[in-house]
Amino acid sequence: MNKIVLSALAALTLSSVAVNANEIKLYQDANGQVFTQSAPDRTLLDTNSLGNTKQNITIVDKKSPNFLLGKQTHINMKFVAQDNPDMWLKAGVRIQGTFENRSVEDLATGATTSYYDAYLRRVRFEVAAGFNKYASFTMDVRNDKANYKDKGEQSFNVGDAYVKIKKPFGSSLVNFKLFRAKIDISRTETVKSARVLHFDRPHVADEAAQYITHNRRGTNAQIYGNWNKKVHYQVAIGDGVYSGKLHDASGATFGGSNFMQKNFFYGGKIVLSPFDGWEEKKRTESYFGQGKHFEVGAGYWVSPDIQYTTTGGVNTSVDHKLLNLEMSAHYKGAFVQAEYFDFDGVAKDWASTTRGKSNGWYATGEYVFADYGFVAPFVRYESWDKFKDLDGYDLTSKIAGVNWYLMGNSIKAGLTFQEDKYGANIGNEKERRIKVTSQWFF
Image (cartoon, rainbow, N blue to C red; front, top):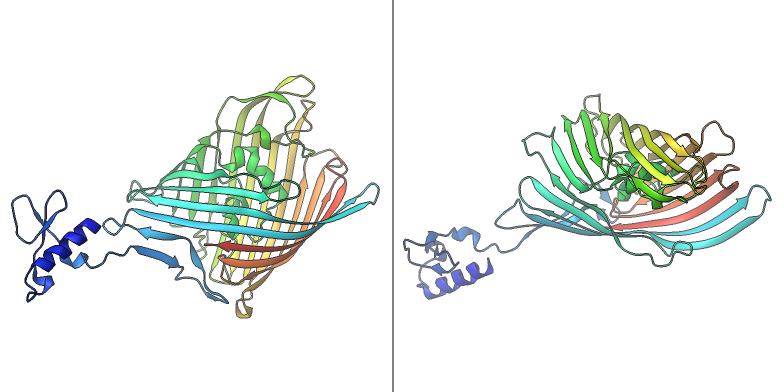
């Protein structure tokens, strides 16, 4: 394009200065050379487009309310090709920081340990590219929990990395995602972490994120879509669990050997918005006191043929099955959300072949005071029985906090109080945390 513009300027300079440039007809050959005279191998150029050489950059979210520091920006800056608007590039960054005080009480002895910690909860570099009207690519490079406890600086790895094929048949009913894209095993796990109420999601939801496929986005193929925003669905098949993220009922990381999964995971999710005017238009937990929605959903996933040798030397096989039920709603400043999880195929411990079930739920809510600087208090309660029918495997978590949306999710800060209680067989302790959080997302 620069070659065309420079050639055009040269042609205009050589032309009579008494003639208006808009009246000059310019012609281009196959090599991009510009001429003022026509020829059989030259095509007429549109001179009206030559003066605009800037790319189109989209930054501010026009639908955003006015926060203390201005309107929320889009997730990333977007650069659109001047000569092909179906080709574009988005790039953005996100950083979440936490400063906290943590105290852990041993419920058997009463002894308490307290310490301070500061760490980067998440660091993201995000890119996306549009290839044409239908296909695009999205990925991020991430580094989580740098300086958390004694983990040091951590390392970067790829999170999302998927090709999206949108409306290839001209309908929102059928779309595709290929490779590393999230499967909807949980609403709060599917919502982008920049849009959740609290950086640390519920324990039971984090377990679900590893129970079917690695980090809920092991390499997979998806079909998804919606009907008038009333019915949303997703079905997927792909790579199964990762042994390094598997836990037994006590929370211990996989301790067996000879791990292998012989088949793909499979399953799906359906979400309904039954009331007119209350349709869910995007997956988020932060609405900033705008609009309304109501939805209910259910998902069922299976990760079969997981085989390994226990620490006791016994060869064993298990199928992981997960049921998820969800609901969420908001009306202006008020937001509520709840989910239920049922796990089948849980290992009691890695030394035995004992299997069982686990179930848990959480409920959360927020109220945004839009007239008072978008300050938003929130609460969350969680209950999880990590191995049903046996005592000492119960976990409860309580959270109360406040978010301050200084520029929507682009810039926000928070203060949170959290108390987690672990049963006799899963730690037998009570942990209290006071966290100061912040997010920068552009």
